[in-house]
Amino acid sequence: MKRRHFQLALASLLTSSATPSRASEFAPVRAGHKLVFPADHGAHPQFRTEWWYVTGWLSRSAGAALGFQCTFFRIRTGIGEESASAFAPRQLLMAHAAIADPQLGRLRHDQRAARAGFGRAGFAENSTRVWIGDWRLEQKGDAYLAGVNGTDFGYSLALQPDGPPLLNGTDGFSLKGPDGHHASYYYSRPQLAVRGTVTLAGHTEGVTGRAWLDHEWSSALLPPSAQGWDWVGLNLDDGGALMAFRMRGVNEKALWSAATIRTAAGGEHKPVHDEVVFEPLRHWTSTRTGLTYPVEWMLRLGPRQFHLSAMLDDQELDSRRTTGAVYWEGAVRVLEGQSEIGRGYLELTGYGEKIRVG
Image (cartoon, rainbow, N blue to C red; front, side, top):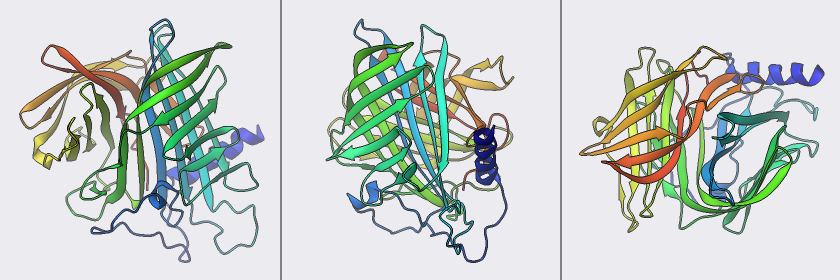
Protein backbone atom coordinates (compact mmCIF):
# COMPACT_ATOMS: atom_id res chain seq x y z
CA MET A 1 0.00 0.00 0.00
CA LYS A 2 2.90 2.40 0.63
CA ARG A 3 3.89 2.17 -3.03
CA ARG A 4 0.33 2.93 -4.14
CA HIS A 5 0.13 5.94 -1.79
CA PHE A 6 3.41 7.25 -3.20
CA GLN A 7 2.13 6.89 -6.77
CA LEU A 8 -1.06 8.75 -5.91
CA ALA A 9 1.01 11.51 -4.33
CA LEU A 10 3.05 11.80 -7.52
CA ALA A 11 -0.13 12.03 -9.57
CA SER A 12 -1.46 14.82 -7.36
CA LEU A 13 1.79 16.75 -7.80
CA LEU A 14 1.56 16.46 -11.58
CA THR A 15 -2.07 17.46 -11.85
CA SER A 16 -2.01 20.16 -9.16
CA SER A 17 -2.55 23.74 -10.28
CA ALA A 18 -0.63 25.01 -7.26
CA THR A 19 2.16 27.50 -7.95
CA PRO A 20 5.69 26.39 -6.98
CA SER A 21 7.74 28.39 -4.52
CA ARG A 22 9.38 31.62 -5.66
CA ALA A 23 12.76 29.88 -5.65
CA SER A 24 11.57 27.68 -8.50
CA GLU A 25 11.56 29.52 -11.81
CA PHE A 26 10.92 27.25 -14.76
CA ALA A 27 12.85 27.93 -17.94
CA PRO A 28 10.76 29.62 -20.66
CA VAL A 29 10.21 28.43 -24.23
CA ARG A 30 11.16 31.20 -26.64
CA ALA A 31 10.83 31.65 -30.39
CA GLY A 32 14.13 31.83 -32.21
CA HIS A 33 15.93 29.34 -29.98
CA LYS A 34 17.82 26.77 -32.05
CA LEU A 35 17.81 23.12 -31.08
CA VAL A 36 21.29 21.58 -31.03
CA PHE A 37 21.98 17.88 -31.46
CA PRO A 38 23.03 15.57 -29.97
CA ALA A 39 22.69 17.62 -26.75
CA ASP A 40 18.94 18.22 -27.16
CA HIS A 41 18.28 14.48 -27.30
CA GLY A 42 18.93 14.56 -23.54
CA ALA A 43 16.84 15.83 -20.65
CA HIS A 44 16.14 19.52 -19.91
CA PRO A 45 15.58 19.51 -16.14
CA GLN A 46 15.26 23.31 -15.89
CA PHE A 47 11.89 23.05 -17.73
CA ARG A 48 8.74 21.92 -15.97
CA THR A 49 7.53 19.07 -18.19
CA GLU A 50 9.25 16.77 -20.67
CA TRP A 51 8.49 13.49 -22.40
CA TRP A 52 10.01 10.94 -24.74
CA TYR A 53 7.27 9.06 -26.54
CA VAL A 54 7.72 6.03 -28.80
CA THR A 55 4.91 4.27 -30.66
CA GLY A 56 4.83 1.84 -33.54
CA TRP A 57 3.55 -1.18 -35.40
CA LEU A 58 5.21 -4.57 -35.02
CA SER A 59 4.95 -7.73 -37.14
CA ARG A 60 5.05 -11.06 -35.34
CA SER A 61 6.78 -14.10 -36.80
CA ALA A 62 3.44 -15.45 -38.09
CA GLY A 63 2.62 -12.08 -39.69
CA ALA A 64 0.07 -10.77 -37.16
CA ALA A 65 0.32 -7.10 -36.18
CA LEU A 66 0.82 -5.56 -32.74
CA GLY A 67 1.02 -1.95 -31.64
CA PHE A 68 3.36 -0.72 -28.91
CA GLN A 69 3.85 2.38 -26.78
CA CYS A 70 6.73 3.43 -24.52
CA THR A 71 6.50 6.86 -22.86
CA PHE A 72 8.73 8.43 -20.19
CA PHE A 73 7.75 11.66 -18.46
CA ARG A 74 10.06 13.94 -16.47
CA ILE A 75 8.42 16.45 -14.12
CA ARG A 76 10.21 19.26 -12.31
CA THR A 77 7.98 19.79 -9.27
CA GLY A 78 9.40 23.06 -7.92
CA ILE A 79 9.39 21.36 -4.50
CA GLY A 80 12.40 21.01 -2.21
CA GLU A 81 14.85 22.66 -4.55
CA GLU A 82 16.57 24.48 -1.68
CA SER A 83 16.62 21.38 0.50
CA ALA A 84 19.85 19.42 0.99
CA SER A 85 17.90 16.19 1.40
CA ALA A 86 18.33 13.57 -1.31
CA PHE A 87 14.73 12.54 -0.64
CA ALA A 88 13.26 15.85 -1.83
CA PRO A 89 11.07 15.15 -4.90
CA ARG A 90 12.67 17.78 -7.17
CA GLN A 91 12.35 15.66 -10.32
CA LEU A 92 9.75 12.93 -10.83
CA LEU A 93 9.79 10.26 -13.50
CA MET A 94 6.78 8.38 -14.78
CA ALA A 95 6.42 5.81 -17.53
CA HIS A 96 3.59 4.21 -19.49
CA ALA A 97 3.98 1.12 -21.65
CA ALA A 98 1.44 -0.82 -23.69
CA ILE A 99 0.92 -3.48 -26.33
CA ALA A 100 -2.14 -3.27 -28.60
CA ASP A 101 -3.08 -6.91 -29.22
CA PRO A 102 -5.99 -7.58 -31.62
CA GLN A 103 -6.18 -11.19 -30.43
CA LEU A 104 -6.84 -9.96 -26.88
CA GLY A 105 -9.13 -7.14 -28.04
CA ARG A 106 -7.66 -4.48 -25.74
CA LEU A 107 -4.40 -3.00 -24.51
CA ARG A 108 -1.97 -4.78 -22.27
CA HIS A 109 -0.51 -1.89 -20.29
CA ASP A 110 1.44 -1.00 -17.19
CA GLN A 111 2.91 2.11 -15.55
CA ARG A 112 5.64 3.16 -13.15
CA ALA A 113 6.56 6.24 -11.13
CA ALA A 114 9.52 7.26 -8.96
CA ARG A 115 11.47 10.27 -7.80
CA ALA A 116 14.78 10.68 -9.61
CA GLY A 117 17.79 9.52 -7.62
CA PHE A 118 19.34 6.67 -5.66
CA GLY A 119 20.05 4.84 -8.92
CA ARG A 120 16.42 3.70 -9.01
CA ALA A 121 15.32 6.25 -11.60
CA GLY A 122 17.04 8.98 -13.54
CA PHE A 123 17.91 10.70 -16.79
CA ALA A 124 20.91 11.94 -18.75
CA GLU A 125 21.30 15.47 -20.13
CA ASN A 126 23.65 14.85 -23.06
CA SER A 127 21.74 12.07 -24.84
CA THR A 128 18.49 10.15 -24.52
CA ARG A 129 18.80 8.00 -21.43
CA VAL A 130 15.87 7.76 -19.04
CA TRP A 131 14.92 4.88 -16.77
CA ILE A 132 12.77 3.67 -13.89
CA GLY A 133 14.06 0.39 -12.51
CA ASP A 134 14.50 -2.02 -15.42
CA TRP A 135 12.32 0.09 -17.74
CA ARG A 136 14.47 2.26 -19.98
CA LEU A 137 14.79 4.23 -23.19
CA GLU A 138 18.33 5.09 -24.25
CA GLN A 139 20.47 5.95 -27.23
CA LYS A 140 23.31 3.78 -28.47
CA GLY A 141 24.97 5.92 -31.11
CA ASP A 142 22.09 7.33 -33.13
CA ALA A 143 19.87 4.30 -32.47
CA TYR A 144 17.49 3.86 -29.54
CA LEU A 145 16.88 0.91 -27.23
CA ALA A 146 13.52 0.51 -25.47
CA GLY A 147 13.08 -2.11 -22.76
CA VAL A 148 9.97 -2.77 -20.65
CA ASN A 149 8.90 -5.59 -18.34
CA GLY A 150 5.20 -5.23 -17.54
CA THR A 151 2.84 -7.41 -15.54
CA ASP A 152 1.73 -9.55 -18.51
CA PHE A 153 3.97 -8.36 -21.35
CA GLY A 154 7.43 -7.10 -22.13
CA TYR A 155 9.58 -5.99 -25.02
CA SER A 156 13.17 -5.25 -25.93
CA LEU A 157 13.42 -3.22 -29.12
CA ALA A 158 16.15 -1.53 -31.13
CA LEU A 159 15.00 1.48 -33.17
CA GLN A 160 17.11 2.92 -35.99
CA PRO A 161 16.33 6.41 -37.42
CA ASP A 162 16.38 6.99 -41.18
CA GLY A 163 17.66 10.56 -40.97
CA PRO A 164 18.02 13.68 -38.81
CA PRO A 165 15.31 14.87 -36.38
CA LEU A 166 12.17 16.38 -37.88
CA LEU A 167 11.66 19.80 -36.29
CA ASN A 168 8.03 20.68 -35.66
CA GLY A 169 6.65 24.22 -35.70
CA THR A 170 9.30 26.81 -36.56
CA ASP A 171 12.70 25.16 -36.13
CA GLY A 172 11.35 23.12 -33.22
CA PHE A 173 9.39 25.97 -31.58
CA SER A 174 5.86 24.52 -31.52
CA LEU A 175 2.97 26.87 -30.68
CA LYS A 176 -0.02 25.44 -28.79
CA GLY A 177 -2.20 28.51 -29.27
CA PRO A 178 -2.37 31.83 -31.13
CA ASP A 179 -1.11 34.06 -28.31
CA GLY A 180 2.51 32.83 -28.38
CA HIS A 181 2.59 32.24 -24.61
CA HIS A 182 1.99 28.49 -24.77
CA ALA A 183 4.58 26.55 -26.72
CA SER A 184 7.06 23.71 -26.51
CA TYR A 185 10.33 22.67 -28.04
CA TYR A 186 9.36 19.66 -30.13
CA TYR A 187 10.97 17.31 -32.62
CA SER A 188 10.14 13.87 -34.02
CA ARG A 189 12.09 10.86 -35.28
CA PRO A 190 9.75 9.17 -37.81
CA GLN A 191 10.35 6.00 -39.80
CA LEU A 192 12.33 4.22 -37.09
CA ALA A 193 13.21 0.70 -38.25
CA VAL A 194 12.44 -1.70 -35.38
CA ARG A 195 13.88 -5.10 -34.55
CA GLY A 196 13.67 -7.00 -31.27
CA THR A 197 11.53 -9.27 -29.13
CA VAL A 198 8.10 -9.14 -27.50
CA THR A 199 6.97 -11.34 -24.60
CA LEU A 200 3.25 -12.09 -24.21
CA ALA A 201 1.89 -14.51 -21.62
CA GLY A 202 5.39 -15.85 -20.98
CA HIS A 203 6.19 -16.52 -24.65
CA THR A 204 8.97 -14.52 -26.33
CA GLU A 205 9.19 -14.08 -30.09
CA GLY A 206 11.05 -11.93 -32.58
CA VAL A 207 9.38 -8.89 -34.15
CA THR A 208 10.18 -6.27 -36.76
CA GLY A 209 8.37 -3.05 -37.54
CA ARG A 210 8.26 0.70 -37.91
CA ALA A 211 8.03 3.30 -35.13
CA TRP A 212 7.86 7.01 -34.30
CA LEU A 213 9.60 8.94 -31.50
CA ASP A 214 8.56 12.35 -30.16
CA HIS A 215 10.62 14.41 -27.72
CA GLU A 216 8.97 17.51 -26.28
CA TRP A 217 9.64 19.84 -23.36
CA SER A 218 8.01 22.98 -22.01
CA SER A 219 7.10 25.02 -18.95
CA ALA A 220 3.71 26.33 -20.16
CA LEU A 221 2.30 23.85 -22.64
CA LEU A 222 -1.49 24.20 -22.55
CA PRO A 223 -3.71 27.29 -22.89
CA PRO A 224 -6.10 27.63 -19.91
CA SER A 225 -9.10 27.03 -22.17
CA ALA A 226 -7.78 23.70 -23.48
CA GLN A 227 -9.62 20.56 -22.39
CA GLY A 228 -7.17 18.23 -24.14
CA TRP A 229 -5.63 17.41 -27.50
CA ASP A 230 -5.84 15.04 -30.45
CA TRP A 231 -2.52 14.00 -32.04
CA VAL A 232 -1.28 11.67 -34.75
CA GLY A 233 2.20 10.51 -35.80
CA LEU A 234 2.04 8.61 -39.08
CA ASN A 235 4.73 6.72 -40.99
CA LEU A 236 3.78 6.64 -44.68
CA ASP A 237 4.62 3.68 -46.91
CA ASP A 238 6.48 5.86 -49.42
CA GLY A 239 8.97 6.89 -46.72
CA GLY A 240 7.25 10.14 -45.83
CA ALA A 241 5.87 11.13 -42.42
CA LEU A 242 3.02 13.20 -41.01
CA MET A 243 2.51 14.74 -37.58
CA ALA A 244 -0.65 16.71 -36.75
CA PHE A 245 -2.40 17.87 -33.59
CA ARG A 246 -5.20 20.09 -32.43
CA MET A 247 -5.79 21.68 -29.02
CA ARG A 248 -9.44 21.20 -28.10
CA GLY A 249 -11.80 23.18 -25.84
CA VAL A 250 -14.59 21.87 -23.62
CA ASN A 251 -17.07 21.88 -26.51
CA GLU A 252 -14.63 19.87 -28.67
CA LYS A 253 -14.05 22.95 -30.80
CA ALA A 254 -10.51 23.28 -32.15
CA LEU A 255 -8.57 26.03 -30.39
CA TRP A 256 -5.36 25.56 -32.35
CA SER A 257 -4.03 23.10 -34.92
CA ALA A 258 -0.67 22.41 -36.54
CA ALA A 259 1.03 19.81 -38.71
CA THR A 260 4.35 18.80 -40.23
CA ILE A 261 4.60 16.75 -43.41
CA ARG A 262 7.89 15.21 -44.52
CA THR A 263 7.82 14.01 -48.12
CA ALA A 264 9.46 10.81 -49.35
CA ALA A 265 12.17 12.95 -50.95
CA GLY A 266 12.92 14.65 -47.62
CA GLY A 267 11.17 17.97 -48.25
CA GLU A 268 8.92 19.51 -45.60
CA HIS A 269 5.53 21.20 -45.65
CA LYS A 270 3.80 22.77 -42.67
CA PRO A 271 0.12 23.55 -43.30
CA VAL A 272 -1.16 26.68 -41.59
CA HIS A 273 -3.61 26.47 -38.69
CA ASP A 274 -6.80 26.74 -40.76
CA GLU A 275 -5.69 23.97 -43.14
CA VAL A 276 -5.47 21.34 -40.37
CA VAL A 277 -8.93 19.91 -39.66
CA PHE A 278 -9.76 16.86 -37.50
CA GLU A 279 -13.23 15.48 -38.29
CA PRO A 280 -14.49 12.59 -36.09
CA LEU A 281 -16.36 9.86 -37.99
CA ARG A 282 -17.11 7.17 -35.40
CA HIS A 283 -17.09 6.92 -31.60
CA TRP A 284 -16.50 4.13 -29.09
CA THR A 285 -17.50 4.08 -25.40
CA SER A 286 -15.40 2.34 -22.75
CA THR A 287 -17.28 -0.10 -20.51
CA ARG A 288 -14.65 0.48 -17.79
CA THR A 289 -14.73 4.28 -17.49
CA GLY A 290 -17.83 5.29 -19.47
CA LEU A 291 -15.72 7.70 -21.54
CA THR A 292 -16.49 8.10 -25.24
CA TYR A 293 -13.70 8.60 -27.78
CA PRO A 294 -13.73 9.32 -31.52
CA VAL A 295 -11.78 6.30 -32.83
CA GLU A 296 -12.19 6.92 -36.56
CA TRP A 297 -11.28 10.23 -38.19
CA MET A 298 -10.91 12.19 -41.38
CA LEU A 299 -7.79 14.35 -41.14
CA ARG A 300 -7.84 17.17 -43.70
CA LEU A 301 -4.58 18.92 -44.55
CA GLY A 302 -5.44 21.48 -47.19
CA PRO A 303 -6.55 19.55 -50.29
CA ARG A 304 -5.48 16.14 -48.92
CA GLN A 305 -7.72 13.87 -46.85
CA PHE A 306 -6.45 11.04 -44.65
CA HIS A 307 -8.83 8.45 -43.21
CA LEU A 308 -7.63 7.11 -39.83
CA SER A 309 -8.97 3.70 -38.80
CA ALA A 310 -8.15 2.08 -35.44
CA MET A 311 -6.47 -1.33 -35.22
CA LEU A 312 -9.00 -2.04 -32.44
CA ASP A 313 -11.47 0.19 -30.64
CA ASP A 314 -10.43 -0.57 -27.05
CA GLN A 315 -7.06 1.16 -26.74
CA GLU A 316 -7.89 3.10 -23.60
CA LEU A 317 -5.06 3.56 -21.08
CA ASP A 318 -5.88 4.31 -17.44
CA SER A 319 -2.87 6.08 -15.91
CA ARG A 320 -4.56 7.48 -12.82
CA ARG A 321 -1.95 5.79 -10.58
CA THR A 322 0.81 7.94 -12.13
CA THR A 323 -0.11 10.94 -14.29
CA GLY A 324 -3.71 11.08 -13.09
CA ALA A 325 -5.18 10.81 -16.61
CA VAL A 326 -7.28 8.38 -18.61
CA TYR A 327 -6.67 8.63 -22.34
CA TRP A 328 -6.92 6.72 -25.63
CA GLU A 329 -3.61 5.77 -27.22
CA GLY A 330 -3.92 3.57 -30.26
CA ALA A 331 -2.51 2.10 -33.41
CA VAL A 332 -4.24 3.34 -36.59
CA ARG A 333 -4.15 2.62 -40.31
CA VAL A 334 -3.95 5.54 -42.75
CA LEU A 335 -5.95 5.54 -45.98
CA GLU A 336 -6.03 8.10 -48.76
CA GLY A 337 -8.90 7.44 -51.11
CA GLN A 338 -9.39 3.66 -51.03
CA SER A 339 -5.72 2.78 -50.54
CA GLU A 340 -3.86 2.16 -47.30
CA ILE A 341 -0.80 4.42 -47.42
CA GLY A 342 0.68 4.11 -43.93
CA ARG A 343 0.35 3.30 -40.26
CA GLY A 344 0.86 5.19 -37.05
CA TYR A 345 -0.59 6.17 -33.69
CA LEU A 346 -3.43 8.39 -32.51
CA GLU A 347 -3.61 9.99 -29.05
CA LEU A 348 -6.83 11.42 -27.57
CA THR A 349 -6.69 13.24 -24.22
CA GLY A 350 -9.17 15.22 -22.14
CA TYR A 351 -12.29 13.22 -23.05
CA GLY A 352 -12.96 12.80 -19.35
CA GLU A 353 -11.42 15.29 -16.95
CA LYS A 354 -9.45 18.23 -18.28
CA ILE A 355 -5.87 17.23 -18.98
CA ARG A 356 -3.32 19.02 -16.79
CA VAL A 357 0.22 19.24 -18.13
CA GLY A 358 2.65 22.10 -17.60
